[in-house]
Amino acid sequence: MYPEWHISGEDFSPKELLHHFPFLILGRTHEKTDICKKGPRKGQEWGYGSTIIVVEDNIMYKLDWLLDFILENGQKIRDLGVNDEIIWLVWWGIQGNMELDKRILEKIASTKLDMAMNYYYINGK
Image (cartoon, rainbow, N blue to C red; front, side):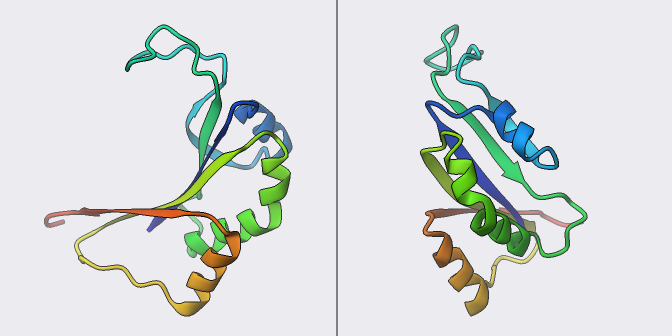
């Protein structure tokens, strides 16, 4: 399982986030003034900053780590201009189901965030 925290905002800067939390690993990041390279806004500024906080591969309990990080630092990060956020669970594997125990569900609920999930079935090894 690879949990992600997708965050964005009109006044949010991923560079500012890294200034405060330099240890974070970010994916699919853009600044408000970056120029879109494709899509309907191609050639125009994004108009909002956006990034995805991902969890280091060497962390065994990735969802626990991310939820603890959100619960401990979520308000500080929202104060940086985040006004749109979602937890996203990405699951890769050959097993077609996922189980979240009560403790994890309670922790997810305590973030008060929406959650999305993707499952990618890997055929064979």
